[in-house]
Length: 182
Ligand code: CUA
Image 1 (tube, protein in one colour):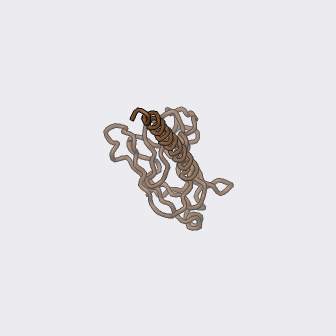
Image 2: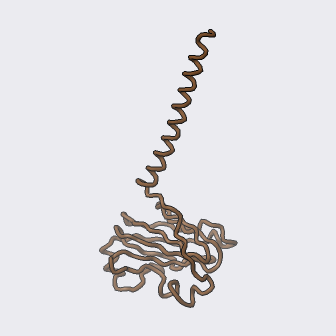
């Protein structure tokens, strides 16, 4: 029995070394898969804005909110998250097009989440949350605020409507800022 012990110890240690190496390998595989294949997004850029003057001047004045088609065909969607609504309350975007969301808040921290997509960001007053994405399929997504922002939080949500690229151009192409809010 005493002759076998060093062997057993060595075997056991080798086995555990394989287990640890396997776990580390698995963690790396998950990181690489989620960052490349699932395109998990890094935290937003750090871009500041004067939260007290949003509605007075600059990028987030009311007529500038909604979906704007850029000269290169991509779209920029500017949204304000405020107690207790999103403006616009219905966002329309075309399929198969690069989409940049630019979102900010005049009051407290809100959440920006588009259900069934990987779009998920905090919206912090004084900062602009910028999220780049793309929608390959038409459909409607619920967009709830998912950061507790006081008593009206649970009623704070909007819709994102993804329409076919050609239909978007036909229905909304002539508007400088598109939205499906009634
Ligand atoms: Cu806004 Cu919760």
